[in-house]
Structure formats: structure tokens, C-alpha cells
Length: 303
Image 1: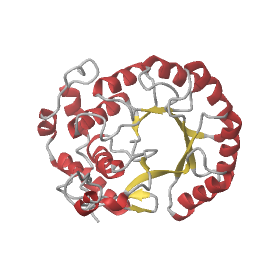
Image 2: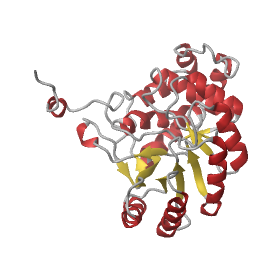
Image 3: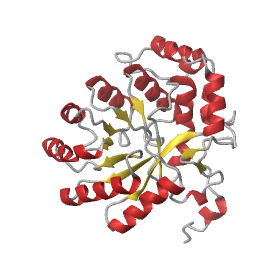
Image 4: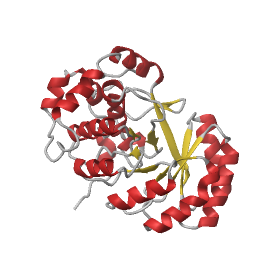
């Protein structure tokens, strides 16, 4: 497979900076990112683009696995899946769900760390379960486990609450963004220093151009982007946009990962391919979300 010139990611990468910026809507953003600043970011990334594209074709883009971490799994199943995802699939990071019971969380984190060893990153995801003071207290109990990040610790609309959590738990990063519906929310989070990991979602906002703006905002504020992809078709939809960021905006792969969930990829014409824990750069044209019509027809409602 190769990074395809007709895929969304490389289509944007092949545009001149001036052409791309002309397609973007900076309304409500210019107090944080101006068109001129966006141009400067894109122009600076022109150097080394060819080498980054070649690197992407050779090694792909890093992913991480959520497979082992679902609440309700037995300890044995969690450990088995953690080893499978790291030792067989090759992922360098896994994620566990937390927040239901502190004793369970601490036991599962201990077992997971013992299973994968010190060189595999572990993130946790609370799915918005805590109030701000509770989040700070609970996360403080996790200090022994060298967390990659704490995801969605509280209500995703609470910009200042996340800022308070990030300040209190630093240097552990707060990660959030999958529920954000527009670029203005990302702007406010970045301005307030509310997270260190920005988690865009391919289907929440108004299309690829808005996602490009989100990547540009993140670059301006020096925040890494690790996209959310925990749903059907989300891996297919977001991976090439992460690759666009690497090629044309941030120029960075270090400590950047795209979520991977092994969920119904077989229903897509061009499903995501993972090799050695990394997303293989796509070959087919389009944004990756074309579904197999014959499979869809099986679920057609009939009067």
C-alpha cells in the first residue's frame, strides 16, 4: 500500500499553502489563529515533505489499542488481550477504561503494567464520569503507573474544569476532544491550557476543512493531536488526516498515535490495515469510509 494522491490526506498535502488556506473558514478563530499564521505554519512544513511522505509509506502511522481495556472484562481477559495487542499486533500503547471503582482501577492498572512491561505506554479513559475535585483526587492515586494520559476526566463542555484538572495532575496529560462539535471549542481549550493531548474526531465537526483548522490550531499552541477512532468507520475516516498533519502541518510522529478498535472493518470496501502496531498508509481514493453495498442491503428495512 502507498499514501495515495487521491486520498483526502494527500489531496490536502499536495495543495499549495495559499490554496489550502483559501478553502478554510477562520471565522471565530482569528483571536487564536489568523490566515497569515496558518500560511506560515504550512509554508514552514514544506521543507522535508517528500522525506516524510517516503517515511510514511515505509513505516505507516503509529496506532494504539483499546481492545484490552473495556470495563466488565475479567482480569484474565484483560491481561490476555493486553499481551495480544502488544506482543502480536505490535502496538506500543494500550488504553484502559477507569472511573467505576477505584480499587478495581488500581488492580487492573497493576496487572496491565505487569503484563506489558515498562516500555509500553498505558493511557486511561474515564468517559466523563468525575466531577472536577473527584477527578483530581482519583487521578492522584494513579501516580505509580506512568500514564500516557487521562482521557475525558469530566464533562467535555467544561473548559475551565479541564484546565483545573490539567494544572492539578501535571505532568500527567489530560486528553479530550472526541465530543467537541466545532473548532471554537478546540480554540477555547487551547487558549485555557485545558489539555496536553487533543483528540479530534473525524465525524464530529463540519468536514475535513474544519479538521485541518484544528490541526493548525494545535500546531500554533504546541499541543499534540492523538485522534479518537473508537467507533465503526472512525479508523478509516481519521487515519489519513493524521497522516496529512505529519506531512504538512506538525511534521511530527513522536508520541502521536491514532486509536485503533477492531470493530466491523470487514464492512468497508477499503478497511484499515494495521502492521506492526501502525496504520498502513491507504492506497485507495476517497476518505476510506465507503461501505460494501451488499452488506448494507442486508439491514435494509422492508415494509
